[in-house]
Figure 1 (cartoon, rainbow, N blue to C red):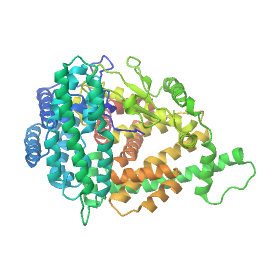
Figure 2: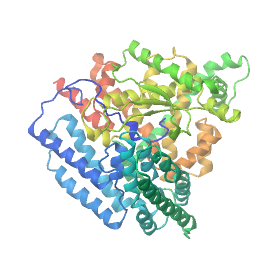
Figure 3: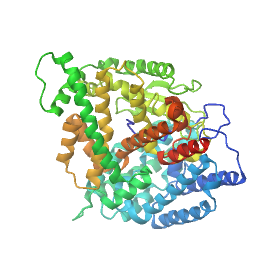
Figure 4: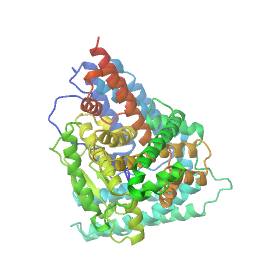
Length: 589
């Protein structure tokens, strides 16, 4: 899975010399499209002026020096922005636009509706202190080499000017914070304050900025540190007789799901589908476990309890893993095999002009072993795409063994498929064939994560791993993560699942380690809806593939489906479905 959110999850370079628009083919540009394209540029520029923090993290750096103080009047500006832009958007009839622009129209419309809902209904600024954690953007400015260091440091310095006012205002806005989110905010701010106390000063030493100016810049950094520490102290002392629950509740959850996931199904329907999927996966895992039992246990009696049977098989297979010192090498060795398999099976066309660069995880990203894709934002067209590989150096033998059992030789292959080929990396390469900034900026996380999950199964269905039942069994375990993420998130936020019930679900029915389950409980108590993106996107892609396969009949090929689906960019699956199935109907008249 993706270990951390990065604006990097979008690759912005145009990787192929192509005149095709996203949507699988050339469409004649009419005057409505030309006007709409002009509007999208205006919309993005207005969005970045309104939210310079988001602009920076997206790779648009004209407003890096600005930090907006979160006042009531600022939220009034957001409301005004959504009304003005909605009026402007509705001047266009989506039916007169190309397929590419139809999707952009719908993405902008959803974004404006969600922004308005956040201000009028969710009001998270009153109860979620993590929304006042500004350190990530400052760290991004320091660490990402998108401009000369001197320029980035001067923007950093100017951006710090509003920090004291920012946190004074935050104290006025917070009314009844969620305790779990308060604790997380305190931990995040205490852990990140070194960006101002140490990292900024260390970076200044590498420049030729005048000593007197550096002194002035460091003084402002000290004021920023004091403001953050005072806010943390205030948060720690803040008491509420009836603190708000971290659970969103049924109504807010359903609405947030609608805007964030953009599925054609609602949250309840996706939850119901996940419950059925869990049953199906368990049945398949029982079959495979019974098939494998004699190979690994000889004539020993099988456990009568099906979940115990599966658990024993998984524990046995998990002992096959790389040594701690070989973990990075093992990942590097898998990637070329994935490239070769995709080519041999003709699953989709790969573009070698922008290779994936494998590197050791940078120090500023350290803390999570495994793998992640890191690439520039949609405005940085010349940046490289990296496959970051973590290290287990310094881990205790017990901790390393536990981690390596989780990411054993089977799941390590699934991880590389998911993160790289033909998962996230491949999908994002295709996404950037389309010259649409809107799809990059307003990308749909469920489609992105759903493709990565779909690609795992697609590879196994094509015979990857020589159809080993061991690999298939372990993939089902991995797939249960996505399924149980959805069950957990909905059960906790829309219903009343307890921690004990959640841990039981994850350890006994999803076969996760206790520590992993504890970590997932913490995640669900400080986030909502995002955990459903993996399964929702996967289910919708599989459903679309099945419908497309039925419609195409004997003409259907996996490659044709994959490439047409990916040609629409990082858009919600429901929009892609409308266009893919409609286009086929038109051609069969």
